[in-house]
Image (cartoon, rainbow, N blue to C red; front, side, top):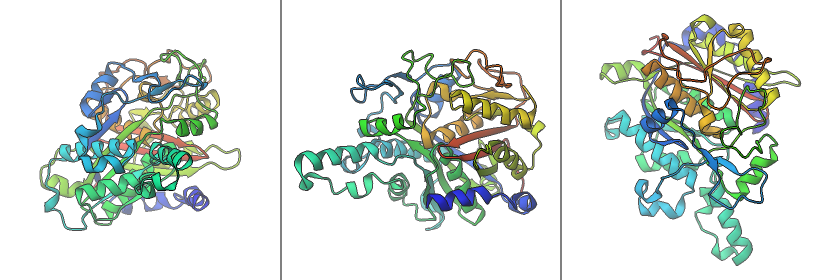
Length: 427
């Protein structure tokens, strides 16, 4: 399945520019946002923390990490499971699913309409996941090894699975339309939103989409460490420094964002408040020795019908390693010119959230367009000389923000780019 997906992504947009006019006949707008993040639970609480430069990165407390080389993480504090889920769901869900259900609940409340008024199969769910219910799986494996198979929960059959967030959201809210899950690591959140946009264009009335991830357990930590890109710096303020000369890797966090997406015409007909339009998207796959992030960005602009000079801010992938940061900065300079567009990475306050990272950047992009402010990158003071970008290190006001570009790269060569725009978009 992974090979087929990679081949699909490598060729997916070969014919996209020629089809741009037809494909963009229906705008997909965002009418609800739900956020769970290390520096804020709930959309507005998180957004205010971001604008204030408040980080959620700190010592890992979910388990004893003293024997590990990395002991920092972006943990969500103050999330009480029982406050967000009925008691019957607690034994059958992993933390990542509980966070996802909370984000979906907020997004639907923000949307503010009655789901019962939709056609039976008019609403669906597409989420992204990188780890599934890792913590649940570890706990049940421990029970198997130490006590025997009779002590393994029957819920293990699905609670660990990548699609479990999609399934539990659809069951809880009675969403029986087209649904699915995307597994492309950090790029997955944008890919899921693109899948949701396709469903809207094919006639779905409403889609819940985005991504939330959480794997802050010993089993998950072993997988994170095996990637070799985590920072071993012990100072939370200096551990994750994308584009910085001292960049030494990234910090892992948990959380993400989910959205309500609708057909722009239908949303406008009922007078809905919209955050913006999911205006453009593209995905590419790196070839041997070939970085295709710039191609993804360029194709996303083509899909949105925009020129590079019409992009007002870029939300960077911001890997936090010197080689990857240099490659991203080079791609941006090739598209916009050196220092040609403001670039920011608010994920420095949360860590990289795997499938939840890009959706959180999409939420930041939409709120930037709403409030006309670019949120800061924290930690990094000045980009390295070989990263010729205009990095935003303090909230930037006074600009006309109309269109934002969000970039994401997944381990193994996945690249995704999305354009978010003000207004309902083309019809």
